[in-house]
Image 1 (cartoon, rainbow, N blue to C red):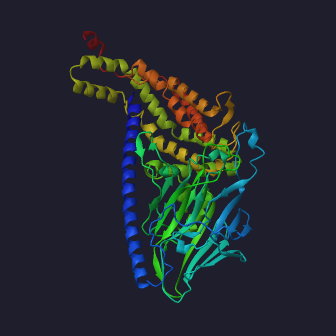
Image 2: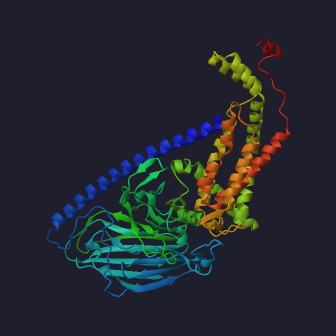
Image 3: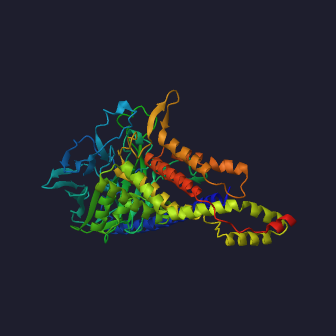
Length: 606
């Protein structure tokens, strides 16, 4: 392996080590935060119960959130539904739980079917939905039986929304107000009032953010399902693999399955239940954050059209947690929560972020830490997405051609650096015989050989690290493109030549007898990479077997990217083709005269 390859592998190993250390640190912090919250909550409930021992309605002192929290509703009572519609969405409110049962996004189709799947062309005529088939509605209040009762609210329609009211047997009156707004927003408030003549001890309350669910029948595995939360400055995303059993990161580091997730210490500004392109966000005022966020996996009914699939769809239920407290007689507490239920569209989320000053744009999930290349990859993801949208909006070109254009522009920007690297590589190749002579002459003095080698490179203005520099500089751009294409809803359903959806593999057909997809773009990508590897000059000092191995290293990309977004394969194919062209252009220019390390006389004497 040449120096560039060694540096690349070393960098990956270092990143893996940093990531592992970071994950362990985060887990320790989560455990500490949960212990602090539990202790404070137990003390609060005990103190309230001690001063109100005659209040029989305090039936539980449960302080932690778990998948067994009370969410069952009395189904013997009829369910009332109220449906409201605006330009963006259709909202279905339910009396069971007194919340938002379903959101239908009118501008987004349910499924983008590949052209080879004829059976889905006529069936996929629905729209994308949020909280699909979830057991509890958005903004249901759960956590303890004394907060739920039979779970059925009185539901009435107001001039611009819905009101849900419920009186519990312990005298607690719960009133919820929902008001539709623009940009996929719903302004909500939840009021808890003690309508009795005695003080009332309340256990910790869970406000349901929603349940992240697979988008369609092609997303049964829910690869991008997750729960997110933010303190208004940064964010944390927890994928569904966090709750999975028998898994490992990168096939190397074992991961212990966790039944639920807790985070926060009085600083939860927003929390989200999301899939790849859509999200339910519950945003609190920045001066009144929630105490904690919690989440756990839930089983879902089979999706329509996938009843026979062996994959059981799962979701992630996410809640905001507020601590235990005591309400005096006629005392009340009201919490304002703004719901966002819509697409993870950067321009829309940026407007909401500015409006509420809460960094809601982080819900794009471009990556943090090592995943976002410590902010650099995230910067390029935003830059590339903005550029792609600008080209699409101004010129009217498709998103596929916008990717091609941006890729060529990025290649042009980095061309001077790439050209310098290639010239240096050609010089090193030309100096290989000189290096061989020096190595033979100073075979018993490695330090002297290194000194003479460095002098030779310096005389001929050769930088041995120049081959690595373009790779290191372009790596954040690569990560930015990877994150952008993974998150950009603009690419969902975007066509390019034979590609039906740039966010999915470009399956042309299923190979008969194997039931395996034939994806053309990844094959073209690897073919161009192998072509580029053969076109580039071999690294000095590398033997023939190593050169052959390096030339076929691109086959690894085929394994990882074969079923990835076709937009990523398009970017890498175009970028590699441009690299081949640049290599050909560099070969046209002859290598300038070099200064030898030894004179001919010295060589002959040797």
